[in-house]
Length: 307
Image (cartoon, rainbow, N blue to C red; front, top):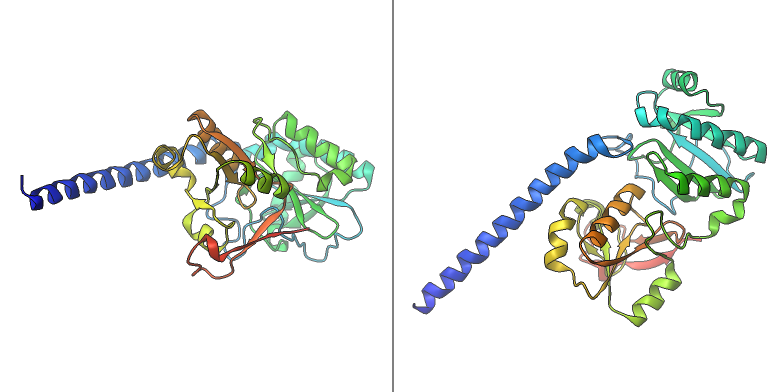
């Protein structure tokens, strides 16, 4: 076989592989979208409830029109809708949160799409709390229900998207009763995976080879991301992990900008495929400043800690 024929043969092989990977990623994305819209325990908002506002993330300042966070060590905000079945199913727990918060002098705000929706939700859920509209919020949310705990500066310190499990319920109630716990990062997530803070991350990186993975969409990643992170959107993770990740490395999923459900799905996906994984997440309040969407790469970003 001539040299030209060999080159052409290799080119065709590579082309077939690229097409296969692209098709598999596309199919995975479609399947994930269909599955997540019907199976995840929250009502997804497309694209968000307010596309012109940034998506709420850990470490971001939450603002409510005409409300002041400084008078309380912690504030509870519930983003719900009367049309969300998971909100109605979560109502008993939300009512318990409101009751314990009221006894502790902690304010609880229930944010709904409209005033009419608020009355409908309150009537169906029996919840007692201060009512605000989604338009009163300075950020957007991926879905309902979302439970947000903010500190006295209005900084979002904890956030749960969807129906929460028993461990999360206990954590939420404990923080409301002991607000000082709001600044203490959890050592492990509900699925048992380690949750690293900044100090633990740096120590881990000095001891072994690690890989930081950001599972958000490419446009979100381009806007801001942690230094040296690799962008593998969640729908592509299962396939790309097999080709791009090393089983001897510790795979660290950056959850500081990612909704809790997506973070958990990514970690579960990695663990189920034999990777050792950890989270960099809620409680560490990491923010990465990359203001331009034209950032050439992770090395252009500076890692900061929001206190």
